[in-house]
Length: 285
Image (cartoon, rainbow, N blue to C red):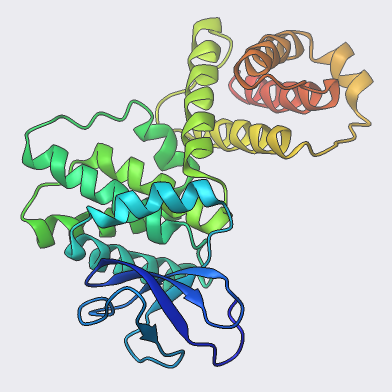
């Protein structure tokens, strides 16, 4: 973070509401967002630390990210940035958590592209909409309100499929999990659910509690694997012996996960998944 009362020297004016700047003493580089912050200032100008126009300032450590997001911000409609900032404020107010700073860059880029697609009659299709709604109900609710706001602002009808994509950004902002990883794990969860349906061992009506619980379990499993968390499963010998059908199905699912993520799936995790499947199978009889 900038040193206390440190002013900023503007390196590049991105737009009327966004500038890239460097701390005068620390030398750290920041994106500064605020209404009209770049309207009258030029490259090399000074933004005072207590400038009341500053709404948000944050630092990106990766130089490659700086270049990529600078190009995006230079071409984003200022109204998109304003709406994005309002949505981020709603996320913080709703969940009481400071969102990951990268949403200030990722969300306007996404909204800009969404507006472009809708204005040009391009379809937005989200095959994982139902799984997303079930996995992130609170985030989905906020994303739905965000979609309404975007629709009002730009005179567009935002489809429900797009609400699913906005949900990924809300979840990413709260969890600090990159949006790309959220999308990737969502695709894998969808594939695993389809595999289970084909096995015809478990009743999974859309929107039912079995679907909800299994979707959440699979997503949590994938996130633990990506974080390389270690697990202990003292029930594993009993599960292998007593939950035969469920354990064999869990092994097949673990193989699909291994191929999709290129990670090892510990036998302990396979056992937990088998136990979850076994309970659902038993409850459905």
